[in-house]
Picture 1: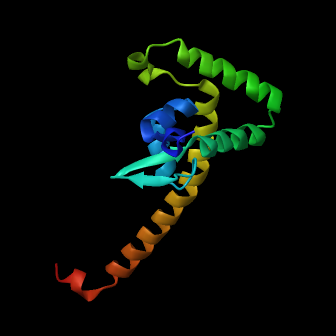
Picture 2: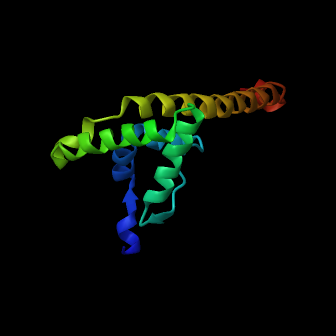
Length: 135
């Protein structure tokens, strides 16, 4: 197969995973989600193998067997294939929405707490700066 045929854009990757585009962007923002293979003129591209590996890791984390995973993913692909391409934007896989939400909260919370901690330190530092007192 031609190498670029195995690459998906951000929108196509979200559709392949069964999550919303906003969820995939949020996962990338907090450093979670599937590994992006390359940037293509400002856009992000994903390998299908990386997306499938990410899905497999989520199913393993939820302690779901490979046979159940294969059944569920084939059902999802069949559901997607039955819908015309222009109407696929609102379709999501409920299981993938749940597990990616959990991953987003897990990774995002730790980053958010770090950001709040550093912001608090900056606030303490600036509150003791004489320059601020003159304002």
